[in-house]
Image (tube, rainbow, N blue to C red; front, side, top):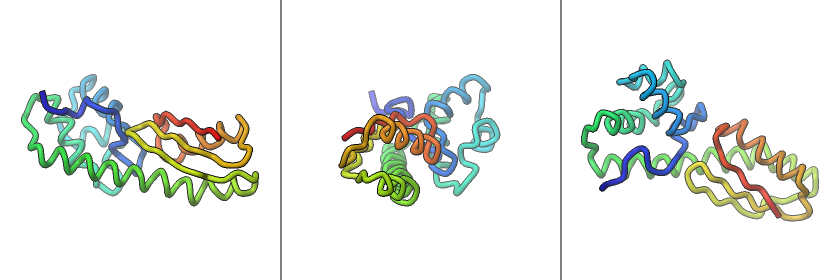
Length: 150
């Protein structure tokens, strides 16, 4: 069986922070059949529109319609690149300056779908780790699973 939109949870709409399972849940519950309906119900697709093809893929999967494997592959690549850019941009511009004030450094980031692992240098403590997680959820997506630690 091939990959479907229900596979790994991911950040579909990077502008507005809407995860794949939120779109799936809304489409199922409300019988959404178009990108416009998804945008109205969830906000996904209401920004730059880069995610429209991915939303169309999710809707096709729900209808049981075939999705070209190349389109699915392209959607995953765009999603991964855009998600990484959104997370790293938020870290660099909004979180690292605060970490620097606290004497903590950002030593690494691993991203896998909605899971983000942030490695901090110095002595971050639990409060700083919570701060990083809260800010990433606020600036990127409330559904991120963030693990921040030294």
